[in-house]
Amino acid sequence: MRTIFQPTIHFITHRILHVDDSPHRIAMGVALGLLAAWTPAMGLHILIALSLTSMIGANKFVALTCVWVSNVFTAFFIYYPNYLVGWYLLSYFRGEQALTHEEVVVLFKDLFAFDSIITCFYRTDFWQELLTLLMSIGAELWVGGLVIGGAISITAYFAFYHLIKWYRKTYPHRRIAGHG
Image (cartoon, rainbow, N blue to C red):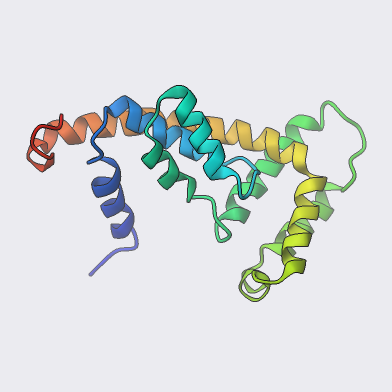
């Protein structure tokens, strides 16, 4: 019987751990892809990941696959905590905000409700509401996204670096001949 985690485990072992590149470059690709995914720049995650990997010399393929963590179904789980962290950090530096914390919570819940996503995803008003929400809380999303994304990226780098080294040492026969 298949578990819910088997596709994820298969993806990691076959698409990330077997990439023909150094553990550092692969782990850096994972980290930069996740950092890009946690930014509120919807639609630009791929460009951000490609730019960062080009500047730093990380694995582009791995970064692009990790960017897809952020999508319409995971947006609430990524952007709402980003907003909360950003709101908390920025509340020390400014007084009044355009929207209250409670108003933003209601907007997030309404916009990212499952039935709203399923029924309104292809309608223009859904995207207009999303853009309006993101514009009104942009600073909070960016600050929170960079803080949370940075923490996740650093953790992911070290976790994947050691996982790749361990996996390649433990299962050398699974590597393609001549690739080390």
